Amino acid sequence: MTLNKTSCTLVTVLLLLACAAASAGCTGTNADENGSAAPTSPEATASPGATPAQPSSGGLLGEEEARSLAVAALEREMPGIRIERMVAEPYDVQTYGDVWRFRVKAEDDPDLEGDISVWIDAADGEMVYFLDGRDYYRPADPSVTIEAAEEIANAYLRERKESSDVVKTVAVLSTVDTPLGSRNGPYHFVYQRSIDGVLCLYDGVTLDIDSIDGRVVSYHKAWRVSDNDTTADPDPSITEDAAQERVLAYLNDTYGTDPGEIVIRATELRWYDLAARQRRSQEPVSVPLAWRIEFDDERYRSQDPPRTTTVWIDAHSGEILSAAYDNLRR
Image (tube, rainbow, N blue to C red; front, side, top):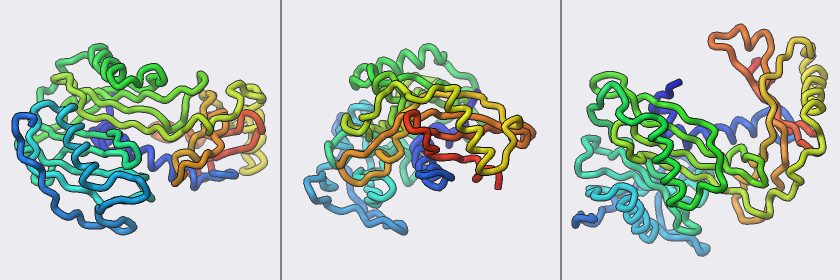
């Protein structure tokens, strides 16, 4: 299985944001080193709904402090990097939260705007995302196996002390578009956060390991759930079979779908941490334990390629938390 470059780098972050937006719109109750010159700071142009980068307040890091941390993070992740220019993206708290985002052009990058990104959390100064998106002429075949890439990824997580709370859920080889055509790109790994033995829906870490030289070329950490959020019992009150029956009844009552048309493809427990992703303060939110039920019907199976969709149900109350079925049928 392969992913296009767009699906495994910048879209790693955008996918999370899109998931949140999609869920909110679903049917349901809630649905140089080496002496490099100091980087300059051209003013960023504000996009609609965003404000230009500027000093922050309320105990959060300002732009210049965040910029220094971003430079240090890049020198750690990419030893020997020589930064030609670093531009602060518009500070868009509604979309990204309290995060400083910088776009970086290295001296050896042919892209005039720069292909490197680094994000710094304005609350604690932690690097939560970086991307080395520079694409050079590449061999057609990978030089690093996926097994070796996974070892590199695991070592990176251990170094950052994040390996004990995550579980690998995705491991695929992506592709990149180069002047010579499509080439194998980085290996894309997704590690979901585990709390009390149950995986989160959104919280986790994504890593991209280059398939040619084994470098870590992208990292993103989403860690919004606090200890006070997951107060629900991690053992469900509603069994898997009962949850499936509840979903079949819901689809029949809401859409008139004959239960005989539905084929359930997968059922798993997850923390439904959408509320934690969307909050704009440090106040605790309730993160319910939920059954994620993936299914299809005759129409979905007839598509090329066949598709599935999901319903989320509270594993204690039986409440339907979100259902994508109606949106996909339109």
